[in-house]
Each structure stands twice: as C-alpha cells, then as structure tokens.
Image 1 (cartoon, rainbow, N blue to C red):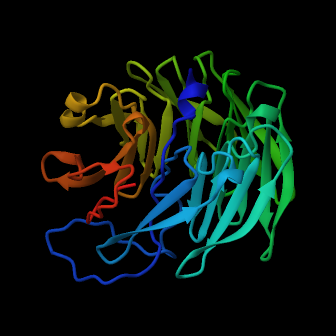
Image 2: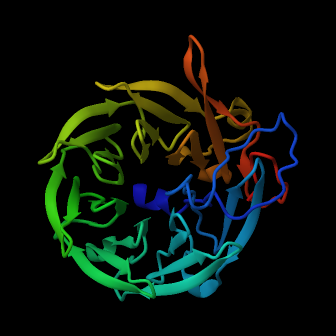
Length: 359
C-alpha cells in the first residue's frame, strides 16, 4: 500500500547553489533567485539510491552537483528538506540524518544525527535553526536546534498512535506531525522553552495525515485512499477546517503549500493546483502526465510527490524515474497557466538543459 509506494520515492531538486556565468540565450527560461534571499525548498524529490543529486539556479542557468553517501547510509535520500544554506537528508533503514551546510561553494557535511529508534529519518523538515525528524516506527518525532556550533536535541515528541512521525512539516514556531493509519495530525507550538501540543486534527478519512504541509497560518493534510485533502486555517486560537478538497483516485498522497497556492498529487497520472481567492480554494489547473509518457510507459505514478515554491511546481513520477517541472505564467484575460517546461528530468543521464537536469 502507501508504505510500499514510499519505498520508491525519488531524487530531489533544490535551488541556489552557486553563481555561474549568465551569458545565456534570451529565449531560455529560468528561475532567478539567490541562496540568501530564497528560503525553503523549491522541491523535494526522493529516491532510495544512495546518491543524492542537487540542482540549482542562478543568473539564468542551472547547474548540477553530486552528493554521495555509501552503503552505510541505509536509504540515504529517503527524506530531504532545505532551508537557506542548510540541507537535511534522512535515511530509512540506518536511523540516521545527515546535515549539510553550504559555504558559498559546496555543501559540506556538518553533523550526523543518530537515534536508536525505528525509522528515525523517515521524514524531515527544517526551518531556520530547527529540524524536525520523524521516526514513525517508534511513534516519535525529534526536534533539534542549532546553537551556532552543533545541533542539539531539544525535545522528543511522542504519541501513542500508529506511525506518529510518518510526515512532518515546520514553519516558524509551529510544526505539524502526521500519522500513517491513525487518521490524525498533531500540531505543536513552541513557546520559547517547550514544544506544546496545540491541537489534534482528526478525520475519519483513510490515512489522514499521510502527507502534511504548513505555511504561515494554513495547514494542509492529505489522505491516501479517501481521495481528500483537508485545509485548516489558524484564527489565533484554533485550527479550523476551512475546506475539504476531493478528487478521484489517490488524491492527497502528496501535498505542498506556498503562499496562496497548494499542489496536490494523486500518485497515478495527475497533480492538481489550487489557488486561494480570499474566500475559497479553487482548482486552477490539472497537471497531467505528458501524453508521450502515457504512450511509452505502462506506469509512472505521476504525482507521487509534489513540491511548490514561488512560481514553480515539481511533480515526481517515480515508476518512470522522472520528475516534471512546471512554471506558472499570468496570461491577461485568462489567468494563470502552469506550463510543462519542455523535457522531463530523467534518471541515469548526464544531459544538462537550461531548465532541466537529468538525474
């Protein structure tokens, strides 16, 4: 089921690694940003191979680098998260989390976190100087804080529910911890000393909490099997359900929110974009598996993972070893249009495109 599907997650893209020359063709597309000014992730795409490739953009060009770990890493790259100059990579079998810091040229390993609990590192999320790490096999989530020199364990969150820590997401002083099978998601808020449980979100939908994402005062919780996504908004006292989105087959297996846009995968052939108009979340566009891949691939699991940042959405298709990047454009009189950028990101090739890199 969902657990088995997660075993095939794939590579991730991230932005902002280092400066390269900007003498590119004017017709070539790119995403411009700087390491300092752009915070969380452009995208998280994962694989169970033990080489994680990271990609970046600066001055209208994309470049690629490799970050290698060997057999001792135990599914190195199963979970990933980046914020500014800190990159966090989790494992699944070896109960380790690797922390890298960008020094202006390279990502150097800063620290390795180890806990002797099952599935430590299955999910990770970093924001500013705090990392949240899920260990669903132990029904725990660990919080580490950076003191300027090392990452120290600050607190262990534990709940007596099935697979607590399956999914995690942090934004500022709030973290959301999802479950796999308990149909719950837990929200904790930091008061300056402790992370206190603020609210439990509970729905009868199958596998509610399998995916979570938080941005500012909005939390998005996905399901698996119920084909639903729940949106909650914080009013200063409580997280209230704002809207329930529903689509066919697998909808909600992955979720990602940035500002007023949510990307939702269905782990089949589609990903959905919703935009908030100030009152409700409306479906803006359906991103479908490209027709060429439908003809050439018997299965791709397009939409198994999604991530959105700025004007870019990335959709993974792990069974085809590919990921697709979409860039949004505002078309006068027609609104927003998410456009597939020419070519997929592929595994096991070395061709570099202006907008894509092959994994």
